[in-house]
Length: 336
Ligand SMILES: NC(=O)c1ccc[n+]([C@@H]2O[C@H](COP(=O)([O-])OP(=O)(O)OC[C@H]3O[C@@H](n4cnc5c(N)ncnc54)[C@H](O)[C@@H]3O)[C@@H](O)[C@H]2O)c1
Image (cartoon, rainbow, N blue to C red; front, side):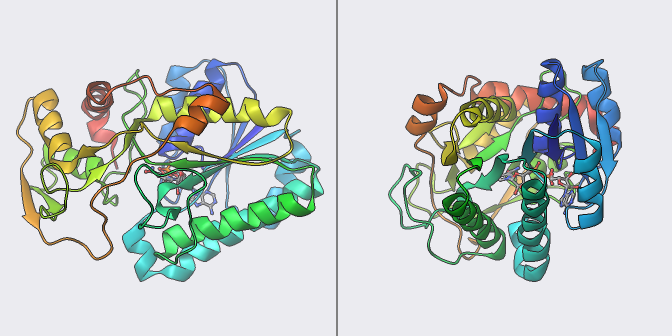
């Protein structure tokens, strides 16, 4: 059985849907701090296969102990975490308690139950900004950035350390670039758009009239049109990367790091233009000052993931945006 932490969230829900399609037995643990039970109903429309849901927190050790006692867990896909850079600057300790302490708790209970296979959601934010583009897995991650990125670096280091000591661990750390898009059914996607400060949720809020326009932070970067350039990857390609990583670690002990991105970048204005075209409505935006710490451009070097995981992102930007459109039209009353 696979334990999926954070399985009601954006990335986790797509993993649950895909694994159910593959007829896998799943238990989801989620505290619903950034999601809703309605996601489970949506997943149940995609797959007839049922899964267990446990409403609870990673930091609840007693709950984790009984979860592992009641279910024969073989592998953990660990998505649960808080993920807002701006919130992490306001409430740093929340990020260390939830992400770092929560993960340590999970590792402790895994170890006690002799469960050593883990796929962890890391982030491109771990890379030091001075690294040359495209970013490779072996590049440095030493600098302090903001508590969100720092919490991911701390977890990466803890995972490296436990693997160094106990050779039974089989861990894949996946550094996501910018997952966007939605399930091809349009039934699940990025639900919690109101609290989210990322580009796509803001485009969607503007499209749905929940705000008049969105802010574009800076148009004076050294990039093709002056706005920030990022690497966007379709959520379904990101999930395929997880499945390949899970297969890879089955027979290999140790820790492995892979980038999951498209390996190329699009500017903020390119994304807004593409959404205006595909959504059939002009998305209004205002250029404002850069945010401190924002980088001009970066994207992933995905050659290691392509080679070792035999994985390639298949869906292009048009597909990312048209799947998002299908999802927001189908779910607009549900987007909490
Ligand atoms: N979406 C992105 O752009 C992105 C990029 C890089 C890395 N990541 C990482 O991927 C993971 C999943 O991201 P997402 O976009 O699906 O986020 P999300 O907020 O949509 O999903 C996370 C889920 O975890 C749950 N959760 C949070 N803390 C928990 C806890 N202590 N106990 C139990 N459940 C808890 C939330 O309720 C939510 O359902 C996160 O670890 C995030 O940092 C995401």
